[in-house]
Amino acid sequence: MAGQDQAKFLQGNLFGHVTVMALTGSVGLVAVFLVDFIDMVFISMLGVPELAAAVGFAGAILFFTTSFGIGMAIAAGALVARALGRGDAAAARRLTTNTMLYGIAAAAVFAAIVWAFLRPITALVGASGETQELAIGYLAIIVPSLPFLIVGMMGGAILRAHGDARRAMAATLAGSAVNLVLDPILIFGLGLELTGAALASVAARVTIAAVAVRPILRAYGGFEAPTLPGMARDLGPVFAIALPAILTQLATPVGSAYVIRAMAQFGEAAVAGMAIVLRLTPVAFAVVFALSGAIGPIIGQNAGAGDFARVRRAYTAGLIFAGLYTLFVTALLLALRGPLAGLFGAEGVARDLLFLFCGPLALAWFFNAAIFVSNAGLNNLGRPFWSTAVNWGRHTVGTVPFVAVFAAWLGAPGVLIGQAVGGVLFAGLAAALTLQAIGREERPEGPSPFQRAARQVRLYYERR
Image (cartoon, rainbow, N blue to C red):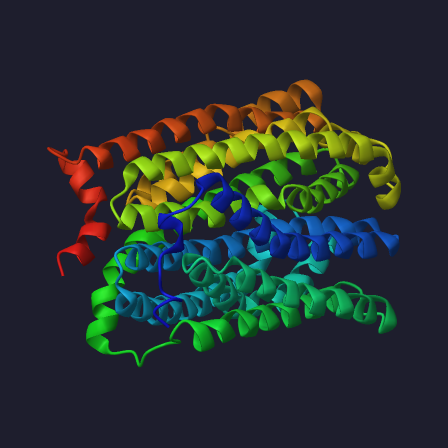
């Protein structure tokens, strides 16, 4: 057990650590997103445009609920990684238990609220008529399974905090395999269409949760019996990171909901085209999505050990990796855009949107990657509200005016272009804030009152 609890990121090549963690993490994400991608292919094969549009609207809302889980997972991963960096295996085990319990309870409440207000929420993102009814039916099945999803996501984050990216990857691969097998059976074999896709997704979430928890029980000490004093002790640190992290993550679906609503004014064909882009994006850029979870434990362990020069090098390695990967994927998408359009039967405005994404706009994903890496750095350096400010800025003032202006100028393609432009500006801001945070940790003497408040999560445990 002692060997399992060692902080493995305190030594070794940082670019190598980032690469291994990102690639192994992305394998699981690719599997999850590829199933979503195949779902869209299956739904498109049914030949009903309203079904594809319904999936597009539902996807924005599911992104909203998933973001809640990402925030809880960030808190669990950051706290466990820093405890391991300090060499405190007992605290890591206690935090594993208490963060998981808080996550399950919060997910149950959040899922109930979203489920109760599905009709106004779907209307808010622009769904109406038959498309709205289809989206509501699809979401009514999936949303109650949110606690299982959050257990799986938090379990994966805890495994990555231990440096065990392989087992975290195995959980998502298992869930994706279940989804992939059940999709054609339920959608086509039983003729359940969207209902079948939803049921397959629920089964996948249950599988991910089970497979993620198993190695925690067997390899990392499992969970301890919770106590009220222990739960009360960890409440502040957990939600000091989780709440701003959740707010940070919720900014993305809020911005996406506005973008989808802006696209809806150009018709269901435009929404269907954007739904294809939304399904293709995470498959193509799964490694970028994985970067945040990959670099977080590396920064967290080294911050816990007080080696902030190594934290700076880890952050730089993450940005270099993101740039190289973005160039590779952009070239690949450009070469495959014709076959992709044929696969989905995309024509007219849907084809235009797909071709735009599979060209110059793919390059803009480097700036999104920079924001992801910066958010991970800020969360693990005890400054989660800085991350919150960056993300909300990017998805409000960095999205709404740009989308409105470019949509009025260029029509449906302008929606995607406007969304990308704002990311460039806020990536620069995120990088500046992260480097400033690292610099202040390197020179902690004489911090301002705001700086002292931002470091309370870390100091809470150091004082004990």
